[in-house]
Image (cartoon, rainbow, N blue to C red; front, top):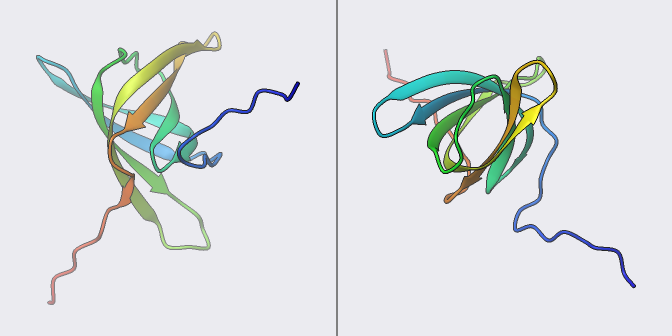
Length: 112
């Protein structure tokens, strides 16, 4: 018998970068920070101290920072599909599924 092999739509990359979150609920909007654990075009896994409920919609900006490259910000919007406690430090693993692929935020420059 062949071993179980998980099928995914997009390839995942183990990327650890800061992520800024904008979380929307019915009655308010909150902001917070997280760290990415893995990222694909269709979603990401985050670690955060913010408890975010499943089915919550959020926007995020991933700040790709490398001292040898220009910084790049990636933007996405998604829905929380899984929340799990992580460790004893009050952190959570948050899985976010995106309806549209994650894209780069294009900087706008004005001629001076």
